Length: 356
Image 1 (cartoon, helix red, strand yellow):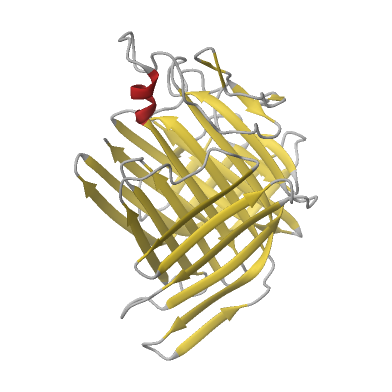
Image 2: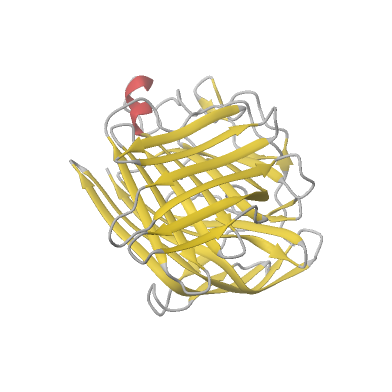
């Protein structure tokens, strides 16, 4: 069976201009990859110029009895993009709220010990914060709606000291050894409330103090001019166990993906590093997806329910994104040989392209 060593996290991810590669059982104090020597070739560009190619992302996937959603931050330094998407699991109805910010300091902080990622614009406030000393991860949003979107507000809290919580970090070649990508992943049980107030229909739906789960991911990388990525994300409960997974297939994958990749399965507080996984959509993005590996640890299908697509062009930057809510079915295996059967398991598949 496939295995990947979980090492102790280093104090710094970059030492003397070189990344410290590996998958770590825990997180370093900073998710900072600045200062890599010549990440884009032999040209002796100073690091303060090559550091400008670093892009950051952060998402908070939440799952409650009635809703699945994602809070998504993207930080390109010259601009920031924040989006909240909420799906009603029964009806498949979708509500999406987007905010764009201009040039500013980094939107997503590098500190893993404590930090706040927040955006406020056009009566839409979105905030994700963490404090590992207090074992707390939280998300708050207060979003003004319009004729097609209800007003939405939520406050979620995840207890990082729960036996069902787990965290892991990785530093990976992207795709060559002179460039790198750093990833921080965690999952935990979640409580909180979500309110959707549809003033147009004069209806209110509310989930209060609903137990759920969260999958959190923060990443930084030296981006290529054109980056393509597909991710499968799931979090929820199976027979009382907190199950979460993050699987990624991208054009910046390591040249040695068996040794270096970011695919992780969390099972009730236990971490299983997964092998390289192929994510394909032979019937189109609105048809059934196939998610499989060659080690018989991942054999899943994904049936889309609701697709949220967006295209954003700002100066020389262009992004195309699909965030698709749907259902996972199939089997995943842990390193102990335990089979986890997914049936009608809600989750999200994301297909992204960034050109800069």
